[in-house]
Length: 179
Image (cartoon, rainbow, N blue to C red; front, top):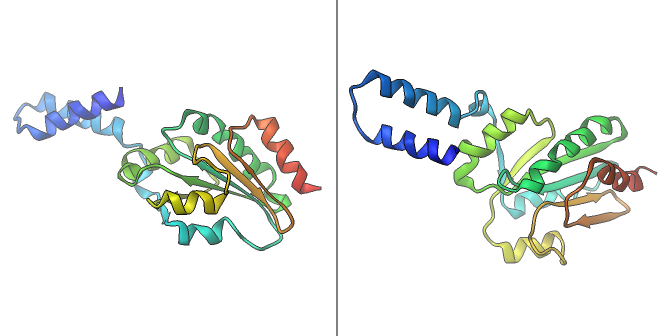
């Protein structure tokens, strides 16, 4: 639906028209495409060299790193579970990092509006590195590159999951680190 709206929008913008009714429709379409407040989101963008220290911290915290994208239905379905973990376990030194694999051309049109619309509170970074042959095996040697994928780690243990979670499953995996 949004693709049709965008095409209609581009047709209206591309054609000079003096009809105020059409201009009103263009304004309405524009409002549907960009989520209010998304333009104020400051997005941190990393290649693998920049991301690597964020996914390999050496501290006393438990880190939950989720690789996701707005175009991935299972990813979107499980995002609220990571938000619950972020809020519920913050006092127990759990840090959640959501690493978006959305395409750079979609940061402003899709990713930022998604973050705004869903009021995501976890730390979110965008990952922009085209050398998949380098970073996929560097993150986990058995990772096919499919998402969602999650790393849970601390100083003593590191587990990698190439799958989606239910709320209960995610918390059960996290509890292995809380003992």
